Image (cartoon, rainbow, N blue to C red):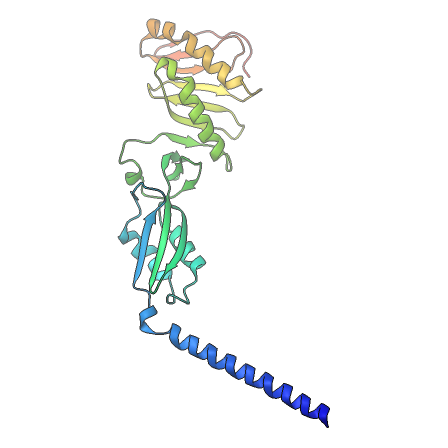
Length: 255
């Protein structure tokens, strides 16, 4: 009999506990649905001190806001982050709540380095390919052109920076850097000259070829002025050169 009484008391306590929890949950739900917790403000902040250049309210309204559901308590922050990362120019977003009815979205913008491929996409300084308005990207001037096999974007960015340094002694810079499907490099410089550098046989192959061109370039300019169209450096001990109306000899075997 005492065993039955203890079992009854335990069951009653459990039911009362469930009832209390149910009432508490209902109360919390009721509070969470109050109008004061309806989202009133979504504030967008940049990463660091630089202001956002391309992420603007009209783009956010049309792209991100329609995908945000719920109130201060029920909004899924990860879903909000994904919605903002779908906005053109947004590289990364993070979201936090601010009592009682605000969301703070911190946004990192893509910084364009150049165009990528032939389909209108852009390449960022961090090697990310993204889609955005080309006219906006070129507000500060025409962008260099880049191309390469899928997955080579960061390698192309790193090579572009190296080529910039390598060509500085002759005051030239790349306007275009391309890595072919066979992993051969070619560069168009800002004087219009196309340079074929070929594939890397070692860590210094490309640098050695550029240095060889840089060394002889002043002599070429003295003789040909601005008539040089193409220079092929894929030879161990020489080069092939094409200028307007002229072709020069080759030494060694192309690689």
